[in-house]
Length: 190
Length: 190
DNA sequence: CAGTATTAGTGACAAATGTCCTCATTGCGT
DNA sequence: ACGCAATGAGGACATTTGTCACTAATACTG
Image (cartoon, each protein chain N blue to C red):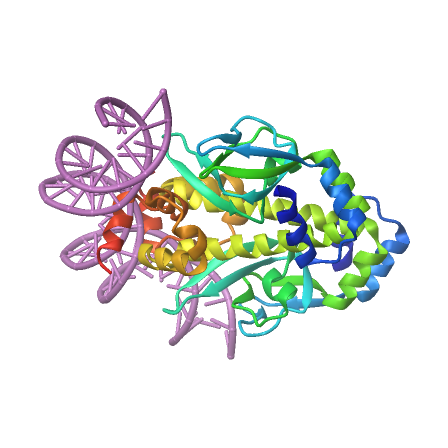
């Protein structure tokens, strides 16, 4: 069942009592989304925290020319939300879409804040997550500047093997900031 | 005096009692660094939190070919540290160097953690800082993918005017992930 | 104040990457 | 099962960006 995935995940990360888990669950809404469904659209204000129990999501942004750039993916046992809008309360420039049929758990922002206050272990988990995310993003900035297209591609396969083979190549290109052409060139020079 | 800059900064951000400020100050060590001095070097473990009272620092990383890439700058009333090493306790891939003669306040990691525990206002300030930093970094990832060299340059001037005119151009190039040649081309096509 | 290091610019050329288009194949929805 | 949409590849060409080498101006240091 969908919530078990979260429970297992949490218990792996920190000490949660059964009551903690029940409380967390009580505020969660389970949602099934099918491939290509939007969970969240540009212009909306992000008022939810999302946990992916099954499937795969993408957070992306569209530029003035209509090209889209994937900021990050979230597969099973990953959290997803648009932090900027979530924190500032401003309309978001990003969208969240399901790449596969997925199952997610959703909490309202206020409820999640309440849970963070009530359950120290949850706070610890989320804080460590943020830190890791920050480190990963900074690393990505460095890689995007210092690595060739080919290196970026190889690194992506290495560091995200589980996700890589579930993605159409144009999404890999979008994530890496490359054109499809460049990507297909790289692949045929290996 | 150096510490006053911090006090003013903090009082602008949140409510601090006089005792709070005295406590924060009591753990701080003031340091003057001259242009080109390193505050922190690759390979070391980052065990300090730094506040820039005066001057300008850069956090950068060198790749295998010896090219360096600036991750971020920190001028007066900015915090600086290498979060990754600071959090993980692992040797850092980054260095911190003074671009101008600067004055900084330095706290030991343990002391700063203690201060965060003792002074809720400080925690609030630092947390909000992290969030802003996260948002800015994510935005930078998007810009690095979606914008041309020229757009990146224009955006940098717009968003960091105060820092821009204190930097040699090759550092702007390094921050933007461009070659010096590209940057000078851009500047002469305006 | 001399001398060295730093900085900005540029020409010639090479390499990387992008754009636009076409085509074949796969796979999904009705 | 059929048909359209999505996917992956690639040819031809344009554009961007980088590399290397050199010059000139400026700024800093002893």
